[in-house]
Amino acid sequence: QVQLVESGGGLVQAGGSLRLSCTASGRTFSSNAMGWFRQAPGKEREIVAAISWNGGTTHYTDSVKGRFTISRDNAKSMVYLQMVSLKPEDTAVYYCAAREGRLVATTFYAYSYWGQGTQVTVSS
Figure (cartoon, rainbow, N blue to C red):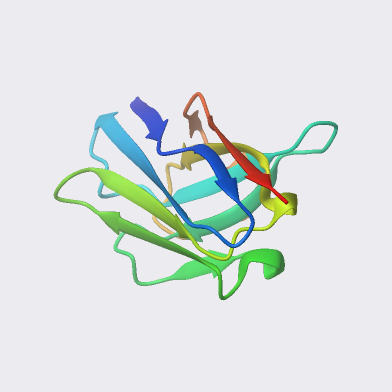
């Protein structure tokens, strides 16, 4: 089992920045690939970014490329999502997720463990 807790969400103006953090506890974190997903009202949960077990491979959805950066610190059991140049369409609940495998995955079903989510609201 892996327990995940997100933090760092909030209200920010368009063009602003936020850094989301995800704290993992439980079984060995360093062997899990991790992902950040988001879900806006009335929309499906979508992948935002993912990172392999050692940080060697990352994936970003097209809409956030060049603006968001995913990273991890296995020594601290932490995953981060640095978000800059935020847009109103980035408004959503952001979820941290862990999967059993070491490699990046982009589908919802590939992840077994989820945090409770943190709200990000970007005002225009």
